[in-house]
Image (tube, rainbow, N blue to C red; front, top):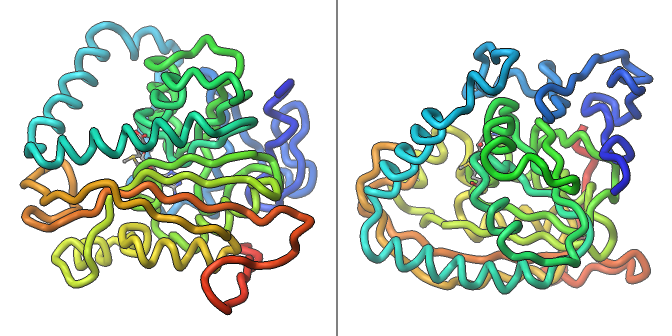
Length: 306
Ligand SMILES: C[S@@+](CC[C@H](N)C(=O)[O-])C[C@H]1O[C@@H](n2cnc3c(N)ncnc32)[C@H](O)[C@@H]1O
């Protein structure tokens, strides 16, 4: 892609931005700092409590250095230390399957809720030359700055956009593929996210989701419901929401199952609950088909989400 600005828009009104990142219609001002575009609208996304709101020092070098890198590593190790053997095995199997799927992608890829960049790293490690660009997204601008610094800032085909999965700041039909790892399970309103991903994909484009899914009648489900993320955490509901958005050829490959051990770092799943480790794939119908080949007899409705 010659310029990321060719595909970004104002999330409020879907209009183009000028060179100064000002919306040409509603006048909202956006920004770009430390290689990360901030295309968040406080009106649309301000209610998300867990947005990072701290001040960011002007000098990134004072923020990300060997000490902070060691801090990230320590935090990762701490998180992984709670995994039981069967969970570790399940994640390994899931990664194996995911690697095969990533090898089949091509063109411009959007990674939903990139966070610390596990999926991004898998995309980079895939060394798939058919992938032309990777656009990382997250609601947290600071997280993207850290991930950009840690994972590979210098590549010219990697872009970082702070944008809300429910109000993506991209033009319609901008991407060939979307990847997601633990994105749906962290963003309230899976229906809206599915609809947005459908909108930004080109006809024939593909979505690939690596996710761990909880059972409906579980403590995990109640916890997920308490923060509005239950639809993105139950395989059946997520497939339903993807279908409703218009996706076809839905496929969920259950690669493993495991019982979650006590982990103070996560609200969901609850300790002792079983999870299914899946790779979900779906496509946006090719323009020419004009038909729905999804779940039986129900019409997809990609309703306008704003
Ligand atoms: C568990 S992390 C995702 C892991 C990541 N995909 C990876 O590969 O390492 C969840 C991420 O979702 C992001 N998030 C939460 N709400 C969001 C929203 N409305 N839109 C986009 N990202 C959001 C969080 O900031 C966080 O970085």
